[in-house]
Length: 98
Image 1 (cartoon, one colour):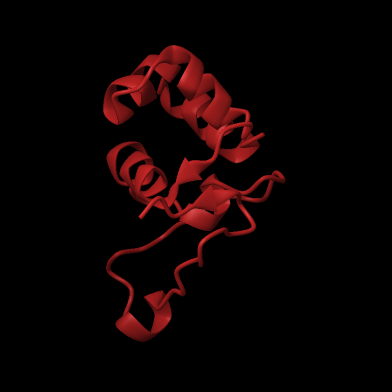
Image 2 (tube, one colour):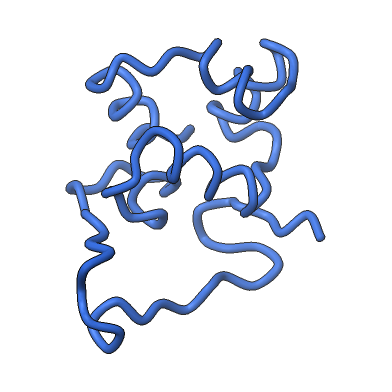
């Protein structure tokens, strides 16, 4: 279950229908992705983060276990904002669909 994402959705007033519209998928698919019973591609995760939670860290939003909030600051220096992208399957259950 993507508890952090669901908590942030609730705080920000983002609905399952908003995610459904963004990803162009069915309501059942959104429910399955939020429950982590269906894998969420890295591209969909980035799309959700960039659209609804641009200041939030991907690893925080899509962690399987609840965590303290982490924010991503685009204005941070390149050295401070360097990230390693997950491989085919990350700990958060995000899979690259390419």
